[in-house]
Image 1 (cartoon, helix red, strand yellow):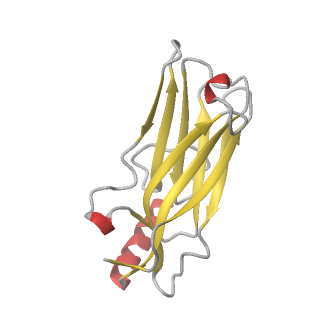
Image 2 (image 1 turned 90 degrees about the vertical axis):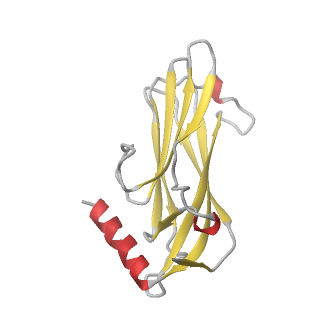
Length: 175
């Protein structure tokens, strides 16, 4: 299906959610220099890591996010303008950080990108020229906090049929 052109590399983006009522943030990871339609070149996303930090690199997210809160972060290959449901075809990966009222915390990453392949086939192929990152918190935060998104990917060349199928699916998901 895909021929690897590069080894795995990491793309990183940081979103800062400002203190206040149910803060949100968004960012764009530009893939324009990696994706080439003429050469059927795409990005294969192998995994996405989410790191939640406080207002500073040494700060604690727990100082900013009160108990009883959930912080959501999603990576999509189409710009939806906000968080989406898990059945949205544009969704590449998502994460939740839950802080309970007793101060306990859990971080959960959904089953994205697709990990049902075999070895080098693991991952999600992206033919769009950007990844869109959205973050939101369900509560009023008392301080800024940051979400760092680390996308582990490689550049691949797809067969003509596979490239067209992914492009058609992506266009259909845009509606």
